[in-house]
Image (cartoon, rainbow, N blue to C red; front, top):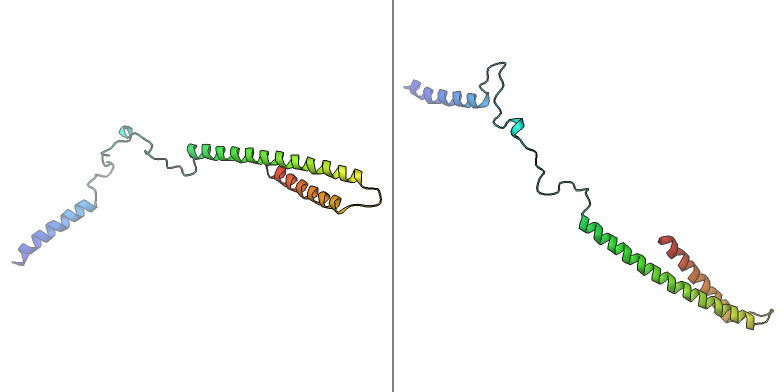
Length: 127
């Protein structure tokens, strides 16, 4: 009775072989269940381009940049007003002093003007 056990085994091998090798005749192609003409290309429902800028993010960044520029401009106006005030005070102090002496106040104001002028210049370069 060993031959009766061979039949199911042989049948199983035939089924496996049939599933592994397509049943096409040479020169004949397998039929495509989804022909190319019936396939429609639809974009995916999500954005797959990771390099594409997010419009909401771009608007938020533009608003932030504009707010920074407005604040920087306000600071520059305030600093230049202070610079003008210090320069006017320095001129008045120099006019009061005589040609041979320089007061400590004049030197201090000149240092403040220099420091503030550098600050204004750096802020202008950054903007």
